[in-house]
Length: 298
Image 1 (cartoon, rainbow, N blue to C red):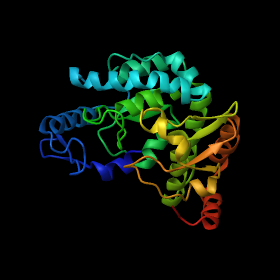
Image 2: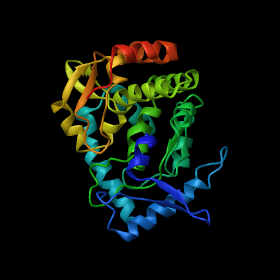
Image 3: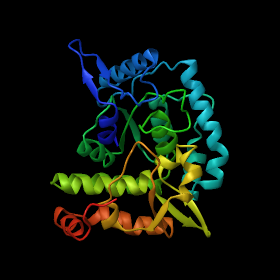
């Protein structure tokens, strides 16, 4: 996910070791110097983290806690109406606070007895192989910054709301984390950049923006949809196609807007069988054959 975000808000290092996040002129926080300074500070904080230690403490402001609260409150009823059963089960087990932003180290502790997953702080770009590879070891790279207060209901970047509300609730359910681990193992198995990007796109259209049928109703299971109060209301109106690994792995998408093409599974079991089975067995050669039959398209 951070590979795409790097093009939207690239991060560079100054001579003193501090980081600077370069927001595009169309970013909601571009003209807000306080927000830009805050992004730089949180990126620098994350960059000082070392493996094997807890995620560093981010001293969130009242304004940042307010954004978390606005989004979390908006998602309470939307999750009940639009989220799949497995996501709701994870949410019930994790019991994230609604009134304030929890620390990544806290969420890691809450996840430990449930699935063993832990959060690792990310300053910005995490190379695809590192991001997905960590999933095989039950590690999940996460940003710590909060989306700009002017647009709390949607962000094109993976902020802490997306990482914790969207992914955290899935990381609390063993059926989901089995899929995360398979994706991580697949990323370590393949060698070519093309195969790794194919695996990443399948992840994007499933664990990020996946939908499924449940008791005759269309539900969401992707973290990108379930962390966005706006997108969760809009997904049923998008172009919906049957689950197709070759097509998903070749699909071109835009991270800066709602996903207008979604792939629907018949059930969560089908996701485990088809997507989990793909990640369990895929190789550079098998992916190359799939790619040859599905040229990149929109």
